[in-house]
Length: 333
Image (cartoon, rainbow, N blue to C red):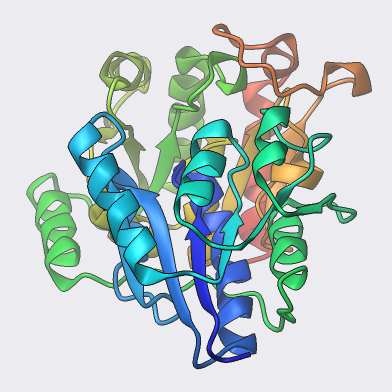
């Protein structure tokens, strides 16, 4: 079956793309001569640079009809035999259908966030295992793949490494930890004032400098952390994707909620402490066996509804809880 031509659909977001990497590696190991192309939103395409498991990255700008039409034409020209939709939203499911692939795999209506997406698939999968990475592996197993070692091929971009080293050197930062206070949904976020207090405690206990990493639309959040972060102030910087990878590779550890930088750090092998509230770490937690999650949610508080304000479960986590978790995680390093 090496003549297979696979289209992978996982267009966003960062953490979900990271969670898809091992499944695509399993696909490559099982079909070494097959063509494997990945359709992704343009902003996340750098994560897939030089990925040995992917032949072609189709980067699409979702806000541009011209880009969407060009992407569909490219997909149809490739004559894929199988489309595997890891996203299971209407958008990705429709694009998979438009690709012309006769076999289209996706998660069933019970699992998908947009249940109607299942109508566009020819084969449905209902995951039985615990973690999202394992769910994705079940999807490629339905296409005939057999998983081996869990791998996260991530790019090494010398220019990005040099840029990060320059930024850190200019600020006098040598050894550092990273805090990522964003989270996409407000209900998954810990208050910035607590991150600031956490920074003060970590500097006192560890002696390393803190770096606050943030993304588009999160500058005010990062500034709130900086203002309450004590002295020496944390370095606040918005890194691009390749720079973020370089930053996290060198970090002593990262503390964040259920967000892309946490999953990226875990994939890189950087020690991680996760602050979790409404989302279930058994499903969405860091995959590293030594990484630690702090969570005080009651069973009924587990939800994937996207609230704007920090959830009660997040507010139940104290700064001392997280400081103790960091200490325990570093003892295991």
